[in-house]
Length: 137
Image (cartoon, rainbow, N blue to C red; front, side):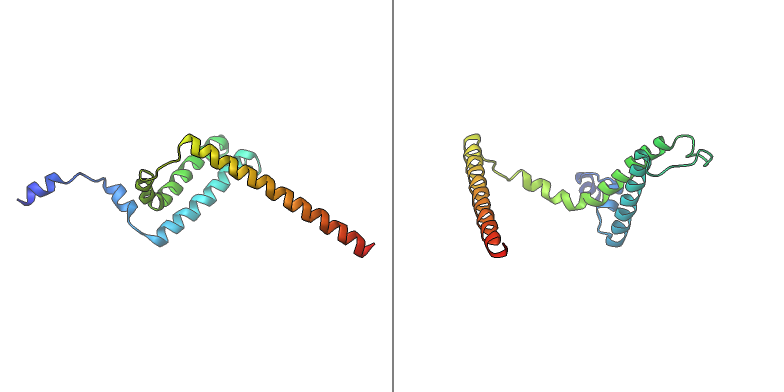
């Protein structure tokens, strides 16, 4: 009976199971290392940080190293951030999106409101500058 119950359960990847557990300190540390590695790789790619030609293993191909480092650090950051975004994926399926007509009506309202707000701010700016010139002239 116990063997049949385990056969019915879907097989889970052990690596994903370990990564999905909440290891708060390790995740923060991995995120910091990934961000620093991304910064170094971008600095090497942009030419801000130079690697000497005689440096072992990196000196000959610093751009290749920077690209590999950028890919690895991006994957590391994705591993850290994935548990935060995974629960929200199911919620996206529950969203009822607006139809095109409703979307354009709301868009028109927002644009009209923004134009109205700009004119109000310009009016107050003109009035404040006018009184400022009267007071301090």
